[in-house]
Length: 398
Image (cartoon, rainbow, N blue to C red; front, side, top):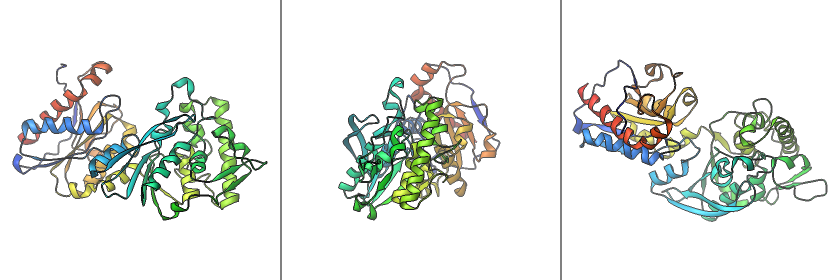
């Protein structure tokens, strides 16, 4: 077992609390990618705290930022139920996809990545000219069939760049070519759309509220659009990016002509290969910060309002984390209640500002200094337990 590192970045502000029996600690981490789910991280942190302050009240609330892990976090936290459905994957092959109903029995949660996730395709099969979001629409149909009145849709991790056309086809929208025939799936075929017919859009959608979780701000088209920014990671080369952007521009023009919504430059419309734009155009959805949707769904303020300490974290905490990732969402909420916030991370970027300037009590790197990545991943659970125990001891001594 690697020796405990001296990897903490600390501020000078001291905890003014508390006898351990009176402490209330909220543990609300995101997942550590490639090794631990958010629930596992929360369990490890809680185990470490309990070794030192066994009588403290520890509230475990695993979180996510609207991307991977959102379904698990919300369903588990609310006592909901998971479901599985056979839907079309990004290349049209049927596969199993998980979605959930929250404990209130009327809110469904769906991740785009469950149906058309980039991670489901080997690198050599990634081709945004061919990939489709159709399976996401099929999951929405499943939620409608269950009686859902509200649907939380997380947009992270998609393999598609079809402007949400596939999703909308599954919901009944027809994208027709010059001969009146349905256009084939994939971002490469959007150029053939000549008419959009929304008359067969599932009427149940009119009575459903959508909360669309989205943590990128990119517009649909242009240099900062879906194709240019995210196309390469989905398998697009330079020429393909240009073609995809032209095709999304064509789609946006047809949408503007047909249903009189201009989505081409709306903030967040480029999320998930343009699914964000489709949700705005066809379902009049509002796109929001994913972490804010998750925290509201968990009623996090009720727990933070009388907490003495809050512990959050993620696999790597760096400059990118400051752009709306889950831990910073927790930091901003906790700031309203004057409770100390600690961040535990598998690694900490050198570009992170001083914790105090961010409203953070301490940022702790749980991994031994200079340890190999595979070892850090293997011992992530144990390192979290040790870091949490040390944090608890320090808080009592202070």
